[in-house]
Length: 514
Image 1 (tube, rainbow, N blue to C red):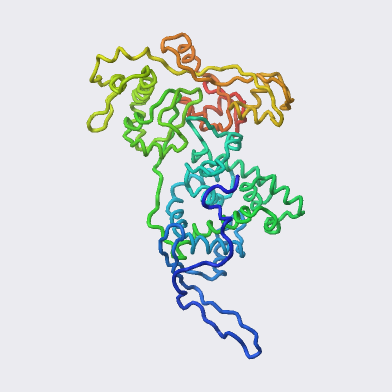
Image 2 (image 1 turned 180 degrees about the vertical axis):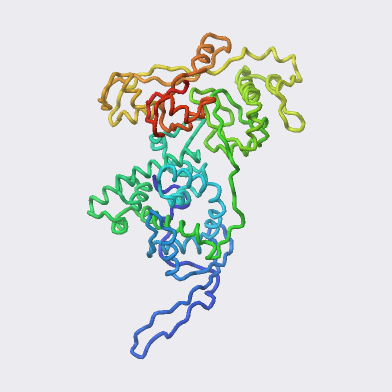
């Protein structure tokens, strides 16, 4: 990933000394300052000892316990599974930093880790990746799925827009799946797997995740070095901090309490279940009718950028608490119809209109905050000012793209959110090579508002009502494909398509009806 993302980029920190507010509690015993021969003896330190510190950002006091480096080294080895957890001067520096200069950040991460670590662990396991990689998200985003860096990297794993789209994440004005905890983690797994295959070394893979594989590759070529710690002095300054920070945070998430950093709580995420909606949806209505607070619903779905979503061909994934699912499943049609009606009504008010007109065409909340479906409006006399009901439909629109210098087909496909195989098919090409000035035909989805009773609307409705096949898009898996079609399971899809494994490829046509 790009470096200089957020406050965890510590290139401004120099030196290895730390300022503390109190005295060491009789942990240092000086044998003698000088021998008869004039040779100065080393100061011997008795471990453990304590220091009083003030968090330099949050100004909170902590009493920190300093442990014998030999104990720390042994503990790092105890949590090492696949990725090397070495202890050296660089790692010691960042351990001191996170315990003595930013203990409150460490405490906050210890409290927040239970929200996202179960997600990371499951998806890392499904992808055959080291469990230790879960600590990387602390370094990348401080476990904030909504974080945006100065370089415009986004989400828990800090994907740039181009890389996110390359790894199948949808990014548009309504949705940014770089903020989707599960999908972004799956994309990060695939990206890190690619980097590890390239370098065959997890430390180099982490370094290249931070600064780019090209920069690490050039440093290796220039120096002839292939070991990360040998290469360490020859890589950019920020990246030199990256792997030691990762190791220090991994240690503290396991042993922070032994250093006096005690979490006061364990934040958790409620059990959630995904629903798929391909029609207009107002999240405020959905929240109210499923017994949820809109702010909670937004927290459960950080990838949704707005609270009003238009109809889309591929649908939206919306997470609801499992505790809401019985009510939702029992009233699914009524709930989604009400949310869609509210959306359409808001869309179809002709401007300029007064607030009274809007109140006449949407469901009104009762005094206790509940929304009553079909409640009569208070002012019926303004209803005639509302225009005829319209709906949103998605149509394929032909575009001609002229290839510019430096463009490749993959970049063009990402720009239009289509697959490379589609572009090749539309243009009768057998290879992915393109020439400057070449005119490529591209078909893109366009959302339009049409009259609800028009032929276009009816055809659009019919065309997506009961599809027989699903064309695999970037980021699709058998599981999320099955979730988009009512009554379809992964087992059904595998049986109907004679699939033995769970892998699918972009552009593949999957039968989703028997």
